[in-house]
Figure 1 (cartoon, helix red, strand yellow):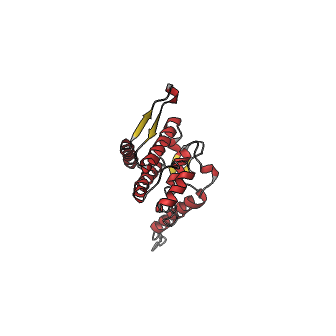
Figure 2: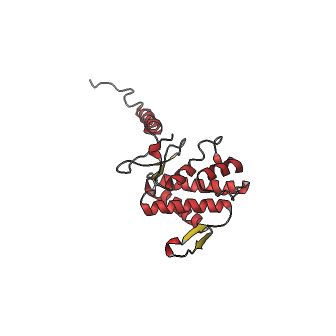
Figure 3: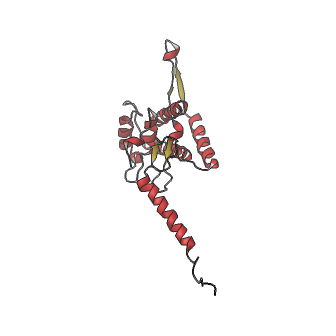
Length: 197
């Protein structure tokens, strides 16, 4: 469920959008090189001269899963899960080829992704993630914990306490499920009860 209030600030929005490229298996943007290339170009993660091949789709799907795991960890996941997610992201980023472009002045110097097209896309995403960490906005990039959803959203709440992509949909599902479980556990509590004589 996308609303403009879920958009992340700056380039972190590209990370959020990339995580959400697989709403369903039928709608997976990374299901074909053509669909992936078109989407990545439109979201400025791929240059026009770059091409995405079939092998790149597996690499990018793995990156998407790793980014979603980090967003889930930002949503109050267990400490060990958060450590594993961030450790996986750290290992992935360490394997990305990067180049230092030295400009005429220090301000014109930058680090740019290198390698295959998919590695360059992942490098850009890693750079945007880094920008979010430095800006203090990254921790608010979360993924909905509802297992049938896992939608990435940006938590705009005052105290960064939002849990669900939509309280009206996923939040209500979780509340209803907890209520059913509570009621199931309460069954038999008064069965066979007789007032004392």
